[in-house]
Length: 249
Image 1: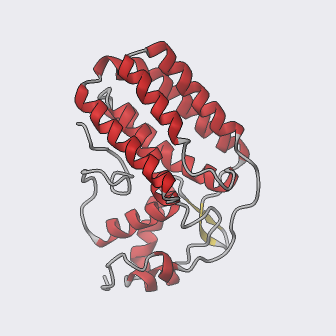
Image 2: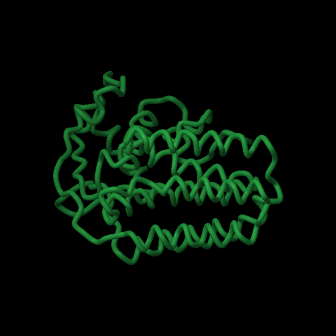
């Protein structure tokens, strides 16, 4: 369906999609996913149950359930004697995440081109326009979110929900990689690349589209730099000041 997404990041992409029920665990889960993907919670950040429970006004048991769900999608890592932290991808994992995306997304593009209709193009144009505005406004969080939305929605055109779900999950892990190894200016993808990809899709030039997408991922990897992630407890009260959830379980 045009304009919708599937998978664990449906809510943070800001599309008109409902994947989770609106219980408290899901609310907290989605808020943490957003904060991680938008680089408000950086890789290596400690996620102590007590501090999060106080921030969200829920029990530690509820927070523990959410952290387990985040660990299942590899956004959180549990370490002995250190507790839960936002996952810090290693160098090999960082390269493999984008290599896998390159293989999946490029391989699916012929199906995307074959299935693409005018309504799909209009939806993609809307995402690109919003992404360009986010870059002009220097709104890094929105730029990251919309960059991921572009890739997920592009692949969704083909109608393969399993592949779209895989790409959706990989965009979450890509954000962790960029948070750790990206240059200071790197906020999602370069939006002019997405404009170029969209122009090729409009022309239904499948060969050029695949080649450009491959270069797109190669350029992202080429701009990654290795450095240390954060290793401190974030200010949860500031990060989640407007979540609207302050009732005990």
